[in-house]
Image 1 (cartoon, rainbow, N blue to C red):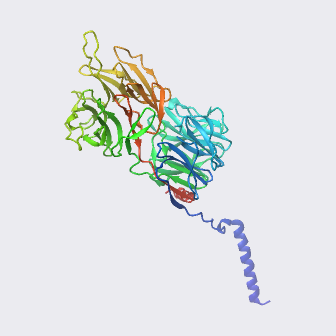
Image 2: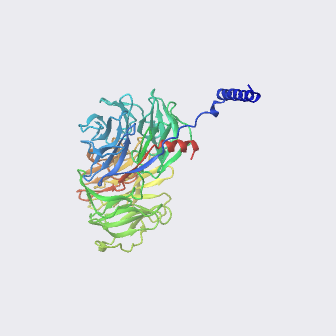
Image 3: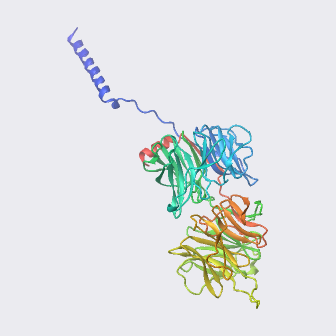
Length: 603
């Protein structure tokens, strides 16, 4: 063997030994590169005409998409479609469906309708089966891997669980009154048996909490609007301020452990469900995301006429961001608040028979809370001169039927003396003649005042005489409405820990001890009609405690004033129907690729 060949052999031996050394002690230097994650795939799913999308759900394996949509018959129905393509199928008998959610294996779907939870097969046309009683407007549900359904009935209750085969629901969580909790909702079953859910509190943003399989609660410092979803890559996905966010989450330890990053800007969201909110998105753990994009029409509503059975008919006029419609005492005019800027609102006076005809527009500052005086003038609240005060304006009857707005007369303050606390008018009454001498008692105005120490208080002004406190405690008392005879008043108070409707006799017929609670499941927005006292329990409208109908109409988010009115003759209601529902939805497959990248980079 030549000397050159010997050197070559020795070199090869050295290289071989060096290679083994490196592989043994520094393996990470020679590991292969991680496989490339699949690229995200964006798409837009069209929806057949005449369907206004509401709530979404994805099966855990990402194969099925379910959504509820209001159709041309005015009812909300449940539809299912394959994510990879194919037509929509309406679930038989699903009229009035709300907030669907799939079983763990994706073979069944559950939803709320008609005061119960129902379940149906995903790919079958068989009749739905009733699981248990539950409010239709419950704040969501989840189907656990061990065959239970956990749901949120609201109304002061916490989360409840029931066997998916049917049975009697049992409580999982209870509201903590010392923390001013208003509701628990949007439960989500996690791997390992834990549940994440949303909690709303008085005066605070809703936030996420967890409850373990052994029933131990834990709070996460994550503000949220609506529901959260879990992804198998180890993140919670949730909505806040119109954005979709992801935060690293330890499903075993039930704790968030990182900084949230934004995934999608501009998704539909609302503040419904007792302050829990709701967001228009759904996620499958394996990497499919569906969402409803927000638009400028999301907050717009239409004026509609609703009879006492719940039948809806358009009233006319263009959609807008409306609030608190109020019919005049003769029923010929309609005052309604419209949003004109970020911090400003106008009041339009419309021809009630032709709402496209504007008779008067009240502008200047932030104007709200229209309330008709029995003599045909209009009162309202405005900060046009500084502190929010009550003003009166004359609405000229000669302008009825006029095609355009008349010049606005100058509003005059109701009270001659300055006030330091903001005031909002609510309702007027011109009591009938009474007393032995037949004299007419003074007209009455019910209003609420924002006290800097006690939140809101309800008061009654006997015109020309005195202001009488009706409900002035540390509770938040507002939305007052005088009975037709002026002898009693209804209002909303959270004295019990949640908003309820109370009725109180006015002096000389009653005293401070006579307020009585008339609602039983979170009442708001009382309005007296010729037939009795109307009020709302979320989406239900009740008359003297008996439900008239259930339907999706606009609410006053803070329950400060009724977002509807009743015809003076008691024939129908004027309500607000949201028009900004999405007609399409966005889909992102393999979205976990984006999540992993964004969460790791913190961008």
